[in-house]
Length: 419
Image (cartoon, rainbow, N blue to C red; front, side, top):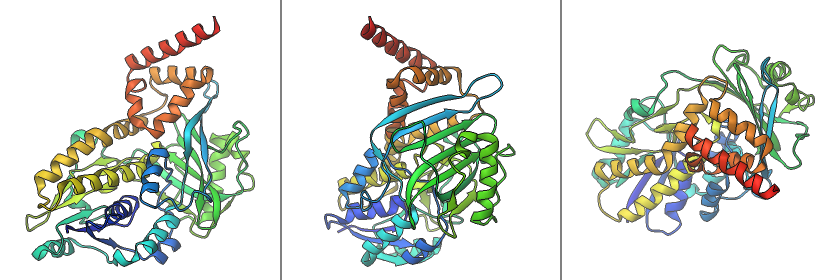
């Protein structure tokens, strides 16, 4: 029976562990830097939202434990703020199935409890990784979380990493008391673009104290929304946030007059450089470990693909490990499957996310798509579907030629239906 060590108890590591354990064909050890109680009591670490294909991955592994408590997000409302040259633009796309957001403090703590007999609490070093591979203790070591010396095992791939500095400053606050979106008749996520300043994203969610909204500011560094500091208390963060909303998105400020933080650790401020890394890490001994999740694929959260990519990675590598059988997990196997993962799953969301990091306003063909989406509901729905299945964007969104072809087909269908 292959013995697998998974370093990291996040979305990818715990989903992979649960998947491998469900048939009893693998011996799995999860190595977590924190206990479940420590996870519950810390600050939030993400702005996760998961769409139907990755929710299905969780359901298949018995991990969908909150569906009856979590707001069902049925639509995405997208707003392009007005400029002196252009009016405000709004469109609403319906999702084919509800999306859901569960605070990782809730999810990961519960899953650590559920998988407790397979969990070891330890802060892992490179020497520890060497020890895991000594004398066949483990057949494969997976690194699905880690910073510092663990992250340095995985080298940056320049041709897949166009940025060398953070493209957004990230500021998150979990709040109660936000009024419903008056422009949408169902629970929705609201994606707001403020040209020259950044983005403001609202995600209905479940947190440690119940249902809430996540208000997530993606500020262009040095721009008018770059006002948050990592040392702020939740109340200080909230005051700065309300100033940002009044100045940059007054339609959101109107919904936020009564908001309060959900808990004493409800805010997060940070920044990182989007980076794709080599998934095979070579230890000083020359032996190899496999990198997964944001250790090797760290995209900005602007497209809400982080947790989704992590769940897809877990499902992909679970199948690859199963298909491999009992033989050694050599570097050739690691590289071959990692390249297949990049081509089949990782590349399109990464390219899409990186393009959204470009300065506003949107590219001309994207502006045409957004304009068409205000007239044709099917275009708005297809934009929303792109968050569910980013690969679909290749067929119509990613290039001017594809957009022109698709919009021509939409107009022709509309003319035929109304003639």
